[in-house]
Image (cartoon, rainbow, N blue to C red; front, side, top):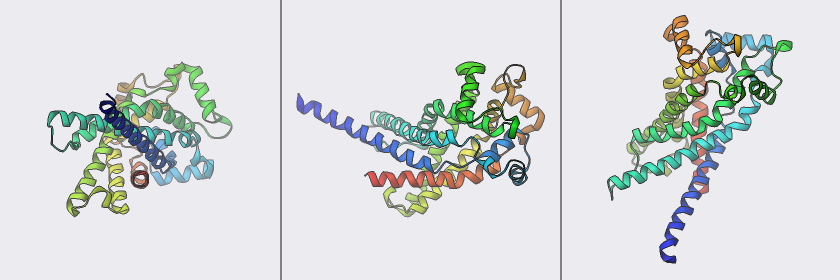
Length: 301
């Protein structure tokens, strides 16, 4: 009896340890994502414009500290979010590998790019539970009036006022479009990373562990560019909904209304406002995240 149970317990412990490593690696990678994207959000919610002129205007009118608006909550939450992303991704990856073993026993269970997309998308859905309210509060702080006219005195005051205005629904404003962005965005992110990594391994005939850090960083950076290029319109609508007013001041009834209004007033171009700053930020952030995650994986064995 003991000899039959022990292998299962050992496998379960190994899986738990691997999940713990993925969560730890993700948290370390999340530190690299604490970059301020105030310019991107302003361009998305205020009808576009030029990134440089917007940044200059913020500096002149609101001072350098304005670029750190809404940074406290993301600083606290980013490690948790990236931990969730990588931990959940590993769990869904294991499920799909198990499925592959059952369908074709004895064959390499490595996921296809489509399956990597599904695992990444599922991880994004899990992550949206945390990322939705965290990003909502950040956007409120980044788009509120400057100086004496400001509405919120920090992240916790913002959260309290959102709850008072519309309850838990108010905190999770724009959650449907957030969920869609997280599923598609992180599906693309993980699939693109694994795809670029696979190309590098095949071209050089090297194992994953043998690839130099700079190549891992490049693969991660390109994956970040793919994420934003293919999910930016959803992010624009999310920002619009999460900066919208409440009650009589509410402009968008739902996600569909926000899409239609954005298209009518600005066309396809309006769905890509703020893309420049997003791409500029994505390359180093995503490169640093994946490079850090892979380094921590190697360190943890």
